[in-house]
Image 1 (cartoon, rainbow, N blue to C red):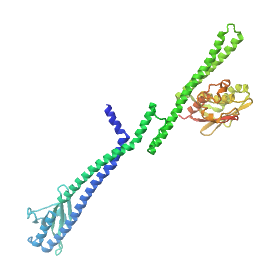
Image 2 (image 1 turned 30 degrees about the horizontal axis):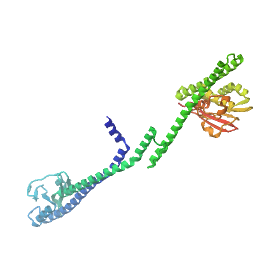
Image 3 (image 1 turned 45 degrees about the horizontal axis):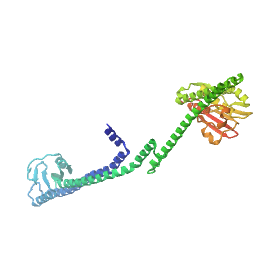
Image 4 (image 1 turned 180 degrees about the horizontal axis):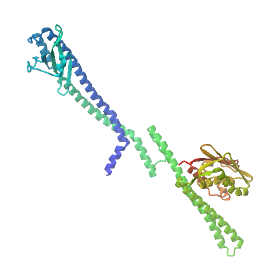
Amino acid sequence: MKRKKKIWDYLKSLKFRLLLVLLLFGIAPMLFMQFFVIRGYEKRAINVRTVDILSQSKILADQVAAYGYLEDNTNEVINKQFELLTNIYDGRILVIDQAFRIHKDTFDIDSDKIIISEEVVKCIQGKDVTKYDPVNGFIEIAVPVHDTMLDEITGVILVSVSTDVTQTHIDYLTQIGFVVSLTAGFACIVLAVLISSKMAQPFIQLSKSIDEIQEGYGTDELMIHSYSETELICERTNELLERMKVLDDSRQEFVSNVSHELKTPLTSMKVLADSLNMQENAPLELYKEFMQDITTEIDRENKIITDLLSLVKMDKAADSLNIAVLNINELLELILKRLRPIAQKQHVELVLESFRPVTAEVDEVKLTLAISNLVENGIKYNSQNGWVHVSLNADHQFFYVKVEDNGMGIPEESLDRIFERFYRVDKSHSKEIGGTGLGLAITRSVVLMHRGAIKAFSTEGEGTIFNVRIPLNYII
């Protein structure tokens, strides 16, 4: 079974396919040329021999008519020419009259016999007839004997000539061609093996390098520049490896952040509980204060777990969306109404501006969560007497939600990472501001599930703008 698999793998390999291509383009044209050269020579030789014999036969036909050979076949001049022609061309001559009787047979076999054949009949009618029989190896030519005095056809000269000499030459050329083809074919095979091995070597090296990287003892970068194709494969593979490394680092950072975020509230609760246990007669006010702090930490832990579960559900698939036709204007008004008490507490003004009525196919719960996260971030990361401006617009295909604030802004180097899980721009004040660092990751997941897009623009110290674009009709 393993042997069959190895054979099959080799047959599918680039090296074998290159070998086949090289052999095809090396040997096939040579065999093709050999076949057509020999066939061309045969056709040319037969044509030349036919034309030559035809012209000689016509001369004889004129002499037969001139000397009245059909009445007296003892004419020495004609008989000598018949003998000469048969010796030169290794052939046979029959002289036939109008009654299809053979007057002369140079082989002295069928004299005075009757012969009726298609060629003789056509010739009596005044047509020259030529025929080549490759199976039996002869050329047959029939020419009419035209009596100019009587202005009629008085007979036929039928000439049969052997093509053995031509066939001998063809056989010789075929043998030479076979030897040449065999030698050249062997040379082509050797050359094809060498060239295919050389051409396939960079790809074999590429495969080994990838295996080494997988095993963990290779270099982190592929650099095989033998061909433009291998160079392009290396570039794309290196980009993929870099992306995988980023994803792996992101995964490790995510696990670390989850562990840290879940452990921090537990650590705080343990410290508070241990402090209470160490005090035998702690006052009631201290108990209440510590219990309030423990409750806060429990709420924080619960929010982290809730957000993590939300992300897990969103990562599975978009088929969990409960799509319904919704009035987006009313949805935004409801979101801002819920968040207005938080904004008033922070002395932040909330403003909603709708440019036109918008109705779209969305998941109300998830979209509410996404927009709420953006508006809540605008409130939390703002300053006293600041503002958060939410606007709604639409065209024939999308609706657009813009959430703009004049808060602390985001540094330029952090803009590309704000949608990562647990990423915080200002980690030193994250506890005072609150949140889990998952809000923007959840928002981005919701927008992508709706086949939309989200972009952030910010200037540190001046404020931040989030632009959300979502199709009016949900695309399955």
